Image (tube, rainbow, N blue to C red; front, side):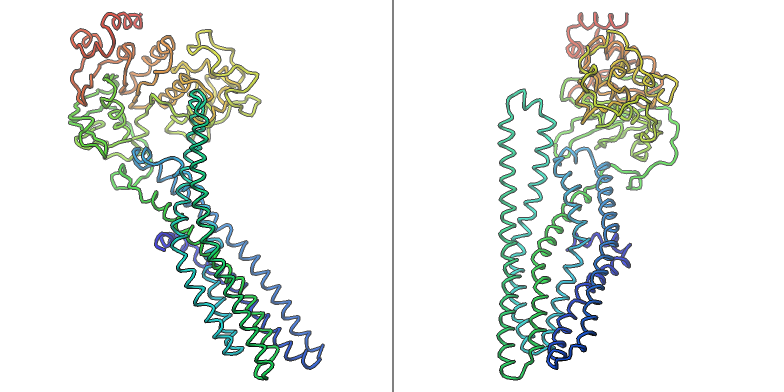
Length: 635
């Protein structure tokens, strides 16, 4: 119950309305218990006397009871729906917000399908429980208790029969409860695995097809589905026993009441009206008793859903504001962009040895520093430390003399902009993907260019797709469509960033220009096109600090040359850390730092390192080839 009890603050905020809804639930069920009593009185009274006129008043009362019951049900449903749906939205927003600020390593450790099932299936289950299950789970036993009291008032024998039926029913359900709870948890966890498997299969469909592994994927999915089927069957078997107990025992009680009532009527110590009233009450109680099995199953699934929800909500916020919370900074500040790494060490949570050790770097405002190292030396880990996607485990990183851990998270991430080697685009338009880098603007508020179209996908038929042309786009810019390339309109910043990333030409050729939907993860575009859009997103806001993690690895040399030429014009305004694998990228930097074995082993200009550092020459390729490529780029 503790996991459900933790929702109490939200329930308490609407407690008055929620209690009124519970009263309506209890009233709509309890008022119907009056009908058997009135029926018994009619049998022993007007019917026994042959007084037809005497039946009019009780019949009118029964009609009023029916109207009142219907009105209570109608009002309960009208009131409960907006409350519980709002709770579901609120809980989902909290879950989503939590996932935005937990450490990146947490996301790496959790399968996406498990998070998805918690955010969708589990919260829908909780909404249904608070809208229906909780009220009836409390009301049904009270109605059964009330019915038992009425039976006892009709005759003590009927009360004894009610007690004799209740004890084995409660005992059977209590015994079966644990088995159902375990099966329910396993089923909900397996549903998360299935969601993960489907997501991976959709995202990796090209790999599955290319390697002919579709049958293997289908077999794996079938195995997961069979496992889920097994757990669902276990739930159904246990549930069937609970329903059997809830159905069979009341039937036995009904039989006993009929037998005792017949004996009483024949013996003269009981009236026909009493027997009919008792039988009618028992028949009425079958519904709440039978509901107990369903309600208990719903309760157990809701407990599991609540446990799974709080498992995510209880994830620690390892990276927080100085006060331990996460909040928006009201006003952005101005910074020079002086970055200093002082004896920085970083290790993964489950690692014994640090991947970065005693890193000392000083990057002056407006300086571009290239970071060069072999695979696995910690370049990406070091880049992730600047926006605090990860936190140092020793030492400190300062911005203009202030430790990054003293900044508010959202303030810091407005200052630092990033572009990663593996670009991530969202399933929205080109405009929104690029404008996401405008830290000062609400992307949703940006006006759409007037294209006269509905925003088709990048690969729409009948139009040149993004991937059909050469990667470099050397065929020259296409004619700008009206509204697609206005350098002075509302999209001026977007187009400027696209020009810097050498992406403007191919965007103009897309079916709807900036309004083109790029599809899930931008997979309708080529790898190089996705990287250039991600780079445009990084530079659009003219960030004070820019982190580029080999953002042009998927583009051809000619396109890289054009991008670097444009970057030279804008990098002077930003303090830039760029991870480089090509000599041309390293030559773009003011200085180069060599990372070897988790340590900075040398720094200098590209030419200086080529001349004196053999390891650097090896990383850049043969020295003569590197020098030739660098010279070509400079020309």
